[in-house]
Length: 239
Image (cartoon, rainbow, N blue to C red; front, top):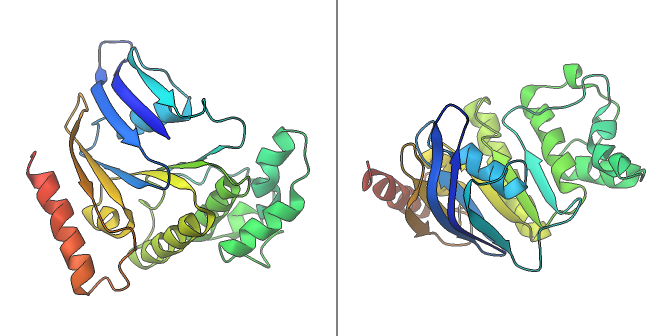
């Protein structure tokens, strides 16, 4: 889907966030970017989204850069319109393009377990429910690529585990390619089909790891333990 070659990004003031990043995003990947704080994971995600541009290097898209609605982005904060209902928030990408999208919005909310909450405002929803609305909004247009920047970082562990499992199932069901940023080895081990480990700033891809495509059924079982060991070894090999 995407080949990144030699991408670098220097910010005003001289901070070099990324330096000569080489990375492939294959169609159908659940690719997790893993690395220390400040290593440029979010910057790399913004380059992929087209929200920023590299100072050097290039991003080559198979078939050309995705068009409107073909890339979904979920941020660490749910970023919902506080005055709008859950349904109106999910329908926002359609309305920005001049379409209603209400039916698609309701269907997307049902997919994330929020049927019956279409009229709820964000203040009436828990943190986990607000994040479900954000995920529904990103998936409703049926994107080719889903970008996620630490979306579960602020949630409690039980809610986080439930959303991880739901996300993995939805991504598989829709056949969407996902690039997911996290600091958590545990999250990476559960979600990823591929892990790209980044160095401390300036960020580079130091190591890549392929994991089984099927998510582990049991976080206490041997399959998950083996995945976690592989991810941990990959991270500590560059520490």
